Length: 129
Image (cartoon, rainbow, N blue to C red; front, top):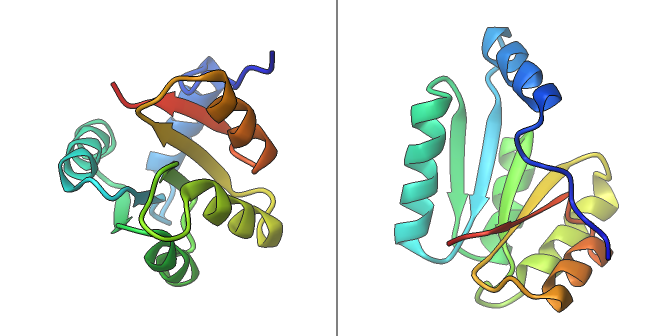
């Protein structure tokens, strides 16, 4: 069974401190069709990292447009989106920008989703609940 790296390793904390010290603002794209979850995640991130820029998209098409405009440093991608699903969108982004960090979000913590997230290029897998 493949496992994803922890989202909050010591190295990640050090990188986070570096990001808040740089002049260029760290940019995050949240791709999620649930307005309530998007807002909650946005609030949590802003509380922890007040100087980051956060952009939002509700589906795959909008995510690709926002990606090209924003050039984010990190993407939170829901698996289940209207239209093209989050795994397909992740694969498209990673084929062009393989070093882009994508956190796959899901309400369903099942082995099939984890394996699919790995196959489609997800760097992390995070259960919403």
